[in-house]
Length: 294
Image (cartoon, rainbow, N blue to C red; front, side):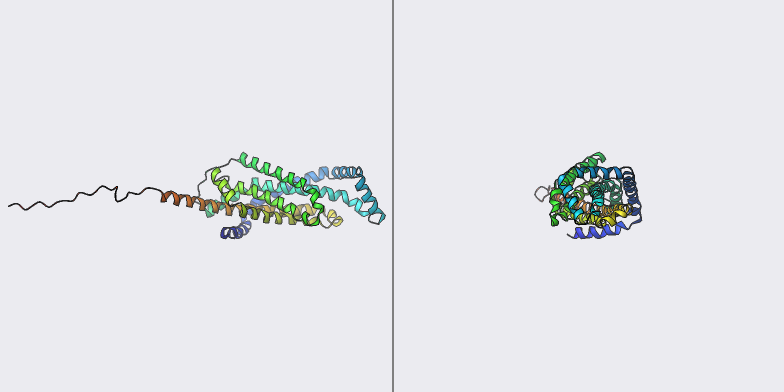
């Protein structure tokens, strides 16, 4: 647990490092640019599509008519935009996570290894396309779990629990693999992921909870929609900050565990190296004094 908390505080300090701050700007700019471009191109058509889809559901139509009857007809106008935002937030979160994992994590790992573990050998256990395939597979699994869990979101406690759990699992799987890709062999990576799975999962869940906090900017309903362009930028910036912190935390923790593992292996190897025993050593010849001549 010492490594757990030590890595946490080191990650907090590294998030303020000028290099990390500058490197985090690239995924931030790409995410903001992508969201702004897609919003400009598809916002109105997405809202129209959601309204047409809702009009074909008798249950939703009846609910909207009931809201009109009780004087809450203003909800009809904001319901479709809220649905679009609700469907877009998971995509923005996943895109930001992948951008940070691809663009920022290698630089963070290089900085951490250079400053803390200069003697840690790079054994190139995974190539960039293996990391990309791993991240894509984990992302698809997380999105599938997110879609399948949507019916459970109508249970009030679960809507606050399930998304952070899914984001936490995805964060753990993606960053734990990426930070070890350059330095650890496949066997070392599997050993650390298996024997340190609970601390790694706890780190992922903590980052998942932090990553879910930016979604609270949308709880304002209609007022939030009026400030949607600004809130989108704030949300993307907060997600980038959270995942940049996650990259630093996982890098410090995993590389420290890798160094401990290799030190233990080196000591174990030195302990089994056979040393010459007293029985196997050849006796040294002793000089016998010659008798004195008469």
